[in-house]
Image 1 (cartoon, rainbow, N blue to C red):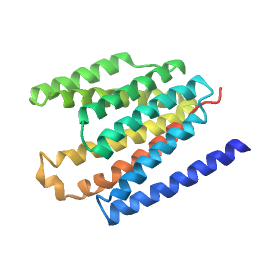
Image 2: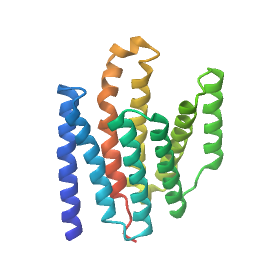
Image 3: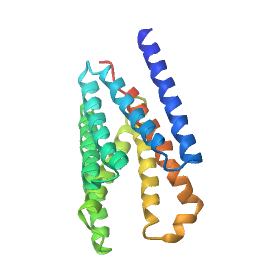
Image 4: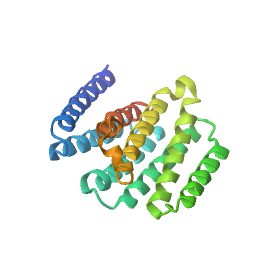
Length: 217
């Protein structure tokens, strides 16, 4: 019963923060309050995971969320040190890979290696293979493969898999948002407008689901 009450309170506060920053994103884009609400919402996920850190699975999720907070500090709050931020997200996916291994999931090594090599090769052909691009492509390949691995577990990995799938949705919005720097026509399109809000529309629910996916034993 106590666990359900805690989960209900956690979801209630997260919902309030979520609605708050989405409203600010729509009505007052770029608001500093929205940044604080977003970071606070992710920090709350970390605190909720700490409450479940009595198991090894809980400790893995706590570690991943700690690196998630570090990544968001660089990318969201400081809006700088992008390479360090994406590198932190690489560590997050490495921890989730370990988590999936402990769950007995297929880790899809041929797909991981093939997708990473293909992405890097395409970037090299386009002469866009800079350090940040390379790390970002490696990160996204790992995220995509972790998502497939989790969803292949069926019901056992459903909550975690859906969280990672929303994570993918967030990153696709980030990629679309960043395209505006290279394709100015995208900057005024409806997809770009959606991507501006869609990043966090997907991101916070992904972190909430990942937090709730911690196994009790």
